[in-house]
Length: 572
Image 1 (cartoon, rainbow, N blue to C red):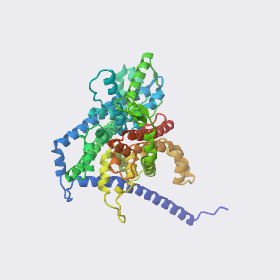
Image 2: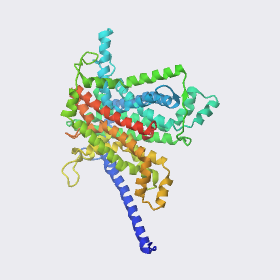
Image 3: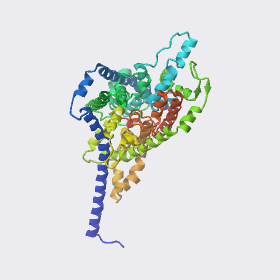
Image 4: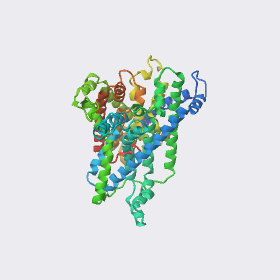
């Protein structure tokens, strides 16, 4: 029996609607509370400390001391030059890779496509170790040169700024490749045809038409490469380079003797963050000046190459990948090898190093899996709603929320790690332990650092799902939560999963923030690798590095299976 509509039922429906609205607003407020506590407040605290004396009086002398110190100025110049050089080298390799893989058909193209993103899973800290084992003064190449080819002195392949540039280039060019592939995949083939019809071909067509239209992807890739290189302090320290900003920030903070040096570490971190924000603003303004309305994903027919062209492409791609995979060879040999001293390869092989890191000291692996898993959970709980707000609502503050998630991509890990050290050194109300003394600080900082990848993966999927699907469900009485669970989520789960897997991979290999915020007994694998290597246990460091690589490769294989080649949107 159907009851007649009454004012009571209407009031009840209105009440339920208001409760849903209030619940949504409370959830939105919760997102802002998370961002305020774990992103905005630490940055404000860092800048407060940078602009005050030890007695908390406002001063500009801290920055005056920095800019009048020739050593720090040289470190700034070195960091900028290293970042620019890495952008140039990764651009040459990444753009070439992207163009060949996307526009031409040749044997083993799919294999090269997958192998070209593998170097991204090797953290620079692990990569520099692998290069040292093969190209170091007593590495495989120098032993062969001196023992078999008559060289009297080892060649310095690694120890210096050129070694850092080599490691960063071969680790980060996949970021550039993915960003360019994503942008280039949106260029309509009709534009190429129009250019060719007026005689623009080859390199001229690429520079006049193709490359300018990839600007959004290129700028985002270049910014990521620059900031990543700019913030990395572990790689330079391994090869004996400490006159870089990130290295100086780390060294000044971890010493507890000189207050002036400690304060200078804070100032350097503030300068790094300010520069990152400046670069981000300039990049966004540059992209905004151009019109990309003609860009949308299109089906691109790959061209066939001549026999000589196919051979040349395969040789070029193989040569780059051989160099990129050198550290993998070094890590594998050193993780299994015994008696590797002044010989090209180890004289014996053993599993004892894996036994030590996986059985005797399993905390590094267990902590990494646990904290990276919690990081992904944080990214999903906070990131998916942020993507929803950005894609489906006009709530006040959504543009600022978008800017904050973009800003996170530009923040140096060293800077955010030091910001947490300053912001959370005092216990919370009604507690006796400061946050930086609790293990939860690690997944929290990693959650903030890797949040944009989940946001962008989800947002990209939401852009593909038309609103009419959700409106149809709501028109027949489905709640928004039901609509999201039954309609939207099944359509966007790939984007959520891909973004989450990227967050997981990058959380596993995070070194900058975790080395600064390490809690004794709760170290992750990058901290374990760094400690083993600095302590002289290089074989254990290599074994732990190989485990880290295998975990990353597994996640990357899953991403490749889910998305195919459309992976760059997470980064741009």
